[in-house]
Length: 410
Image (cartoon, rainbow, N blue to C red; front, side, top):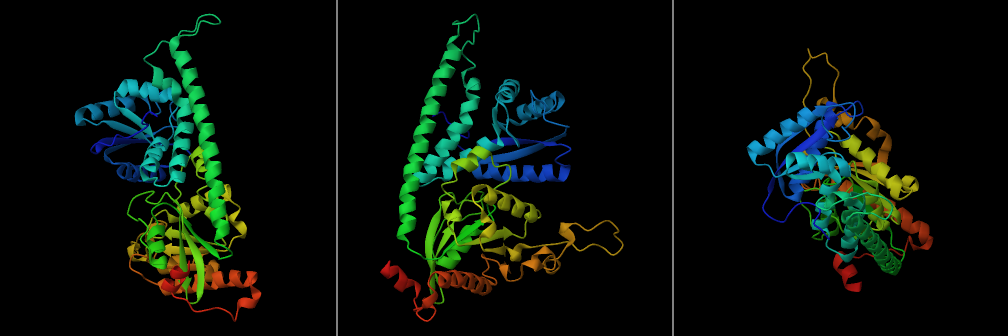
């Protein structure tokens, strides 16, 4: 399969492009570009410039206006930039026109995410899902891959060789998509058997936006060494570990993080990865409270959870992580402008909508191990409640295990 995105060579210079629209104000557009820069860094690119333009809607041919495209072109030439990344999905027509004008590699947000997924996937399941998502992304964009061929459209039966090649490739890709879906069904069956073999242990799943500290928390609670770093999508493969708090064993699952503007077909491809979320008894929704837009990230996660499973009835604990990194700027007494999120202290935040969550809310730092005991108490209470609902006569039969005893028996 043709490599969709970044080469595996040294880091490339990249320019980012976004729009300010009536639906997306300047502050949000800048925030999205910051996140796009983080994605580019994760993929191995170095962002050297960000371009924003105010338009009512994207230009159907060039995404941005012709004047802005010319400005981007001049910057690309002057600074020897090899890649331009757009914050929204581009059509086949847009990519073709922009590539012809700029003469550099053109990516959109989806293709960048797919590149990261391809690099992060480790297991057969994740690799298959990434490949499926890549082909589904590639299918409607086949025409731009054959621009060097003729596309004659004479009378009936007078198709040019380029069009014939496109149809051939389309059939090949459709066959591969069907094969990959069949492979995923087989993998799903195997994983379903694995889940059944785990018995009736309570299942707790870590969910949340990407890069909020789920894997760090997983390592802390399970005393394991799940890969974690300050990059988007550090975890792509679902990881399950046995955890014991006091005298109660349960299963803890680390899952792939969510992100804004995640394409529908990408969510579809990774639904099987999130089977652990669907079958979880308790969800630990991890939130990076130090992020200035953490509330919007919470909404993105909740929306995605609703898409992949009906999480409304699942017990959920909101775990506000990274309290050690939380900062705010108090307003001056003579400043009469309305307060914004950056002017509110953590103690004040706790009295807002979070206060209504009562015992389903905890503030921690997984990195600094702050308030971890309170988190364990809350998880233990939920897990024990579910355990006793399944085994009501086991209240007095709990045995005292430590992690080594449990691992030696499994």
